[in-house]
Length: 213
Image (cartoon, rainbow, N blue to C red):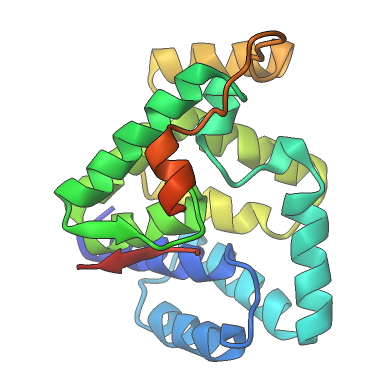
């Protein structure tokens, strides 16, 4: 998929997978404009269908659906490092690496959010070629999220499917990690736990999305 098209996919997906706040209607209108310039095909069809579904709900319905889909279901978590690392110390290292990736691209993650939040990573991927590489490193998590949304019969699955189509296919290691996750779930540490995020992230916080410096 050409870079211009994949960037549009990532940008549209970032909006549709974000919590529907007071700006959501205007953001959806921008998504509609972007989709109108996208080539015909399955990806455009997937995103157009979900955009129409979201636009057809009231603000209250959209917010309730979002919370029910992503906030009340651990298997549909939007924080991608959770799938591979669970709430373990290794997740803290992964979060630190993501902060470094944002900074290397000239971005900072907005206060109040962790750097593995999918809409923030999608914003980075839309704006910076290196961001797409970072997102692709979490292919297993995207595949697991997609499976959970399909199982729940959620239209949001179409958004994640479009993102997956805009990325390289899974590697052998991605497939093995997905099989392990489906069989065992995310790893956990039962004793001696410290906060999974490193202290600098907990102190600073990291809201939704990346902000350009």
